[in-house]
Length: 133
Image: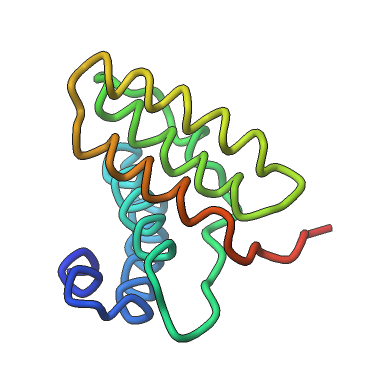
């Protein structure tokens, strides 16, 4: 539902729906679904919006568990990289994670994920989340 809302331009609503979904998947210990939800959330947050962009969850998707496929690994890395980009202190690390994800995506022909990575990186120069202490 969140993806459909985001594609329809309802980015703020899509972000709220996707944040709820990521919390639900985390509670269900579904790392594959959780990583996809984080990737979709990252794209919705990176989309143009009229209100301030919310920060993603402080829980790292890289700790969600092991993955069985390059696609799932790339999805986790996209979500993790996006989260790192949201803080100026970890922005460089975020670019490194996304660059590595792009290499794997290119190696396995994951064109959709490559476009996602490019979009997130292109929008990473926008506002960041306040640094948490």
